Structures are given as C-alpha cells and as structure tokens.
Image (cartoon, rainbow, N blue to C red; front, side):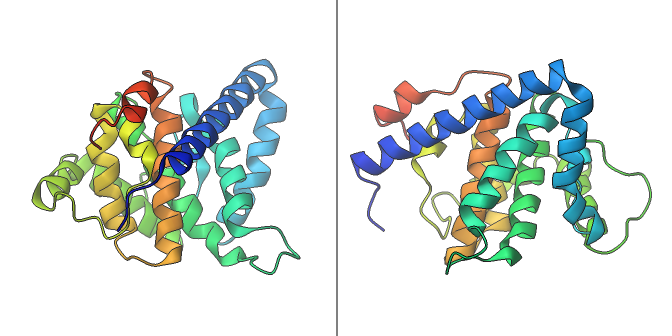
Length: 220
C-alpha cells in the first residue's frame, strides 16, 4: 500500500493537535465544574450502559473527561450524523470499545490502573472487562509480544500519527490494533484510527508527542 503523502500527513497531525486541544479544554472544564462534566459524561455513557456494551467509568479519572470528549467527536466523525447517507449508528459500540481499551492500555503504561469491575458484568460489558483484565492484569506484555512476532504485518496501513507516539506506548497500541482491527476493511480501518488517536490523546497527558520527528520521517 502506498505511503501517505505529505498533505495527508499534515492533515492528520493537524487534526490530532485539534483533538488534543479539545481534550485539554474539556479536562480543564471538568476540573472547574466537575458536577456539570459528570452529567455530560453520564449522558455520553448512557448508550453503553443501556446496551450493556461499554462503560467510560472504567477509564481512570485522570483521563476520563478528555477521553469522553474526544471519543464523542470521533463517534460523530466516523458514524456520521443522522440524515447523512453514510450514517452508521452501529459503529458507535466498536468505536467506544476501541477508545476505552486504548485509553486504559495507555493509562496502565504510565502507572494508572483502570477502574475494572470485580464481579461479572451483563452482556458484552463482561467481554470488554475480560479483555481489559487480560491485557492489563494477566498478560501485560501480550501487546508488545504481538508486535515482535508480527512486525510490519498490520493488515491496514498505519496512519501517520503512529510515528509521533511515545515509545512507551507505540508498540502496545500497534499490538492492540492487531487484535481489534486485524482485518483490512473500512470498519476496521476506523477502529484502528480510533485506537491511535485516543492513544495519542491519552499519552500526551504524560509526555510530549514527537511531531517534529514524525514529520522528519521517524520510523513508526
């Protein structure tokens, strides 16, 4: 598959910077008005809980506000709005799964534990809980192992923003994309995009992203 051209790279980095800025602003809002932010996050989280599919409350509190806000933007971007001929509401669940898992994997990489339930969950919530428990508590090196075993074999083309990810989380997020987006079709491309964007937004909380090195052509 052809590499991304310079214009596509520039647009990807610009979009990521915008999303990081949005996440920072919402995080500041949440610190200044935690009650109102909690209400808004609860509204976003409602479809996941009602369907027993996902729960943003599992994301560590230090990241939850910004991840919730950026995730909501990605849902709108990728699912499209009602009335749009490409509107696909069924994408919301896999997008939120990818966002929550990516955020929790990054948080764990920097020493923050996700708020995982200690008892079985209803429906697909239990599948998500078991996946997170396996990735973070039982086999924390699994994602790095996947990348070492299958270097450069991600079925989809890695987006340009992978190159700016901190080394601490880069291979783990690539490994996560192997697991959650291991098929080269439009839906899985969107899931991988969410993994890397949310991973970058979360990682930027702890250390700077290497935009300069990425633009200069640092290997992913």
